[in-house]
Length: 162
Image (cartoon, rainbow, N blue to C red; front, side, top):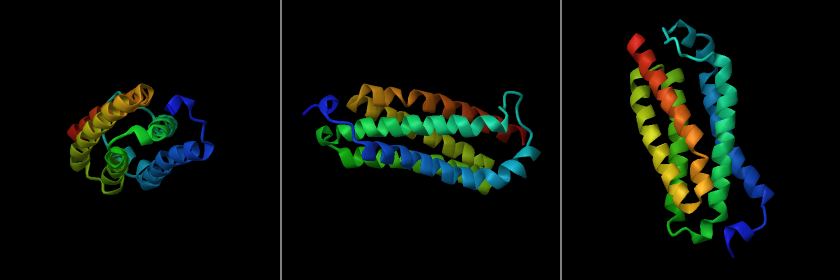
């Protein structure tokens, strides 16, 4: 049975949304104190967005990531290497969380800069793998790629200025 003919599974959909949102929330908890205390003391570039922009953008991105994962999950029986696909997906989520930990909790901007380029490479790889499985699932990663690219530029600028 083709995935597009399969019924919508609300439980699986909600789980696929909950996973990236939960990981993002954990990242938010790791950043909460530093955003109020340490981060304001850093010299930032002129294009640094206000702190209020980050939570809604990340929430939106995590929703897109969850929808993308659900679309792939629906085709799991057709995916030869589904465990590898799943592992890649979770690796990029863990790397996303680790960036928050390294940058805001450990306050290691240089290490965070290296880590975000690894994260970006894994996100792009994840998007390509998802695209081969489901074009919409892959395309839903584009805003995430663009935002993390911007975050990499921001991280580089903050590293350079501090």
